Image (cartoon, rainbow, N blue to C red; front, top):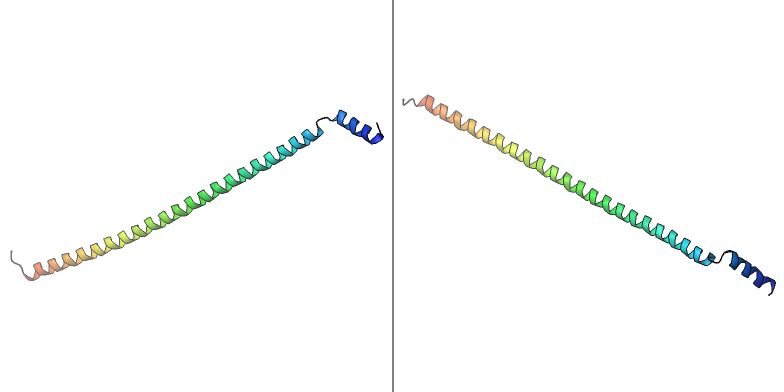
Length: 99
């Protein structure tokens, strides 16, 4: 055996699974990276969903408030119309007392 082969044999005997350990370590790193990447993707997806829900909720709140404002205006218009009708009726009764 020459010196180079002897060193390789010694290294191989001391760490017989060095290559396998390196592959396993790389596999763990890749798996960890994949898990972190998947977690980041899920987090981004959830954040996007929450943002969309918040936007939809705000749109609904704005729509409801707008509808309430419209209803308030309509009620005020009805009150004015009733006041006018009652005023007209009182004036007619006051000018034409038939009773």
